Length: 436
Image 1 (cartoon, helix red, strand yellow):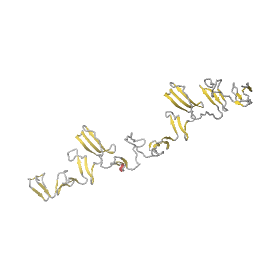
Image 2 (cartoon, helix red, strand yellow; image 1 turned 180 degrees about the vertical axis):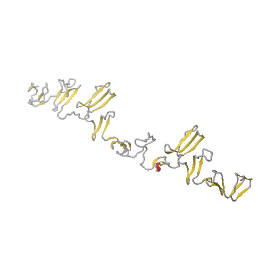
Image 3 (cartoon, rainbow, N blue to C red; image 1 turned 60 degrees about the vertical axis):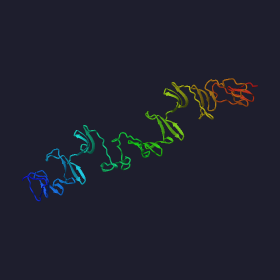
Image 4 (cartoon, rainbow, N blue to C red; image 1 turned 90 degrees about the vertical axis):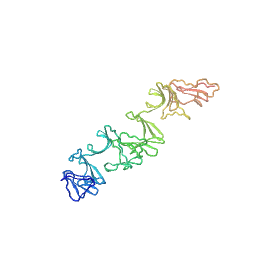
């Protein structure tokens, strides 16, 4: 066989099988009604022409539309120029309109470059299967002169997150809201694990009203304790599924008591509701005290009034310590009548400087606490005075009764208004001469 050459403009047509030498060179057109087959092993199969298309019986078809790959064939790349080199990258057809990059059990990756100078200087995004993690990934990367670039997901409509093939979350195109596909069915994080650290917001957290048993804002370890909203403009604080405090436009309402002293082992000061309109300070068998301060510098320098239970007695007193004055006045003042009362047969005693000075017994007897003087006024009475006199009980005639409960050292006295005599009891009644 010999090589065949044709000059420009020549037209060669071979209607039947022809065999040529090592090559055919054509400067014009070569029209073949059959096929061209290479006899060299490993070259290609039957090369044929159909209309304006060039085809290979093993590979595919080249025409005005493009390159078409036949059947399960694809585009393959090899790191070597040798026809027998192993191919390590393939693009193939999975199905109609579905292209695939696959090569047996080898994990694949696709790189899309932003910049590329060489294999050590680039910016790119990679879609790959990470066999070490057992997952598909989309990640950005850079090397050398390449800079780290952000990654964005941009959609003309909503963006759906659908793990395990089920729609869970939607990033809505309208408003940009993150929406659960199914209402009230999904959590963010998990109790005790996989939790976000802090959540920052620009305006508000908006929660449902909730209830005392399931507060809107609660705790994973104690879900029946927290904050909820019983009604309009009202906030409730619940503990153990029970409303403990209510805050509304009128103020703060407490269900049981108000406690102070969280630094103590247990609260050591309590304000309680005894009944409607009755506030109580009580704490079991512990004696209580209420202080109202005039001045307070610190716990060692103050002036205050106290109402306190001391040694089973209730005291109302003023106290000063350190720089505070210890002799502040205590005044009991009433716009109407002021009553001092004792019950159950007990006396009333008036004390000064911690000593009993005057006692009114349950029978009404008035006695001093010692041999004290009783002075009426601080100056002499005028001869025309109409007040300031010392009064003595009187009786119509000589007294005959025996005085009871006479304090030691005391003598009862009475004036006989009929006989104008003053009587003193000293084991019996002794009368003075009649007054003129």
